[in-house]
Image (cartoon, rainbow over all chains, first blue to last red; front, side, top):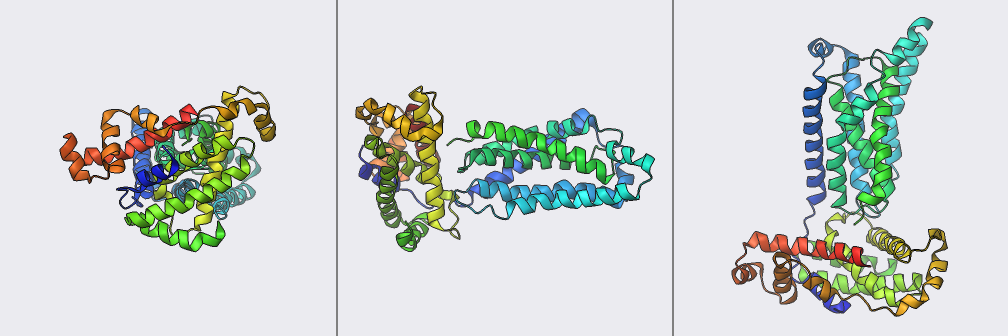
Length: 213
Length: 181
């Protein structure tokens, strides 16, 4: 088949392009990811029994806002990473801002704490399991978002994989806040960040293989 | 590509909203740009240029919904062409079983000069290998130019199955090209 014939074939009956598809794919993947994480959390970890009391604490909302803002920034990053040639100039700033905010809060908390208290603020009582729980809860979103991305057109596959992983991590962390008993900013700034970085690193590793199109 | 950005962008915008003639003109123009782009970068293996042009055209068509009308068309097109070129070079390096690092692209070409005469891939053959539920819709709708309704009647498939068949068939074709090259 020569190229002119191919051009004709592609153009014939092409119809309007489905320009809403990228947004729909990400919406579906995000919904699936959150639903999957919630199911895993309820089945394996359980809701925080003190959740009702926590909702009256400002720090609980900070803890929720941290991954929520990363989800928003991660979605913007993921949709840009799946559009060839889209500018990524504002992505690093948008992703760094929530992390920097939580580190500033963590710094303030550590400075104001009594010296003997600082280790407890950093380690809480669940630091050994927190990152792994977040990574575990991010598995459904990890698969769903890579699927969504693969159907679009990522051209920088390692970066796109990392972005997909980070978004999955943020979704996992968001759901994990409903189980997690910790409220200290230093804890969030270390263990939540680590938990979200696990799927991000995995995404960077598998991206070039999984996202090819 | 920048000189014709405005013209191509207008054609694509109309094509994306369903104007078949504009879309055809866009693809035809794009073909010439792609050919020049790849020819310049694959000057050691000119026989591969047309294969890569065809592969990229199918990719552009399949992923055309990722173009954001607010975005420079040149940036979108260049990113796709570059991605397809690098993907092609990687595949080629792998099939040639050369262990040289990819930075030595030109060395790879020099070393595989004998392959340059190998038969060009025939899309018609790849198309014939598709399962009927994808091949029939492509043959009737895309090659013979029948409407979706006519094709549905002719093949006994539902209209949505015809549409899905065309869509998945072109994706499968792109996948076959990646696997075969």
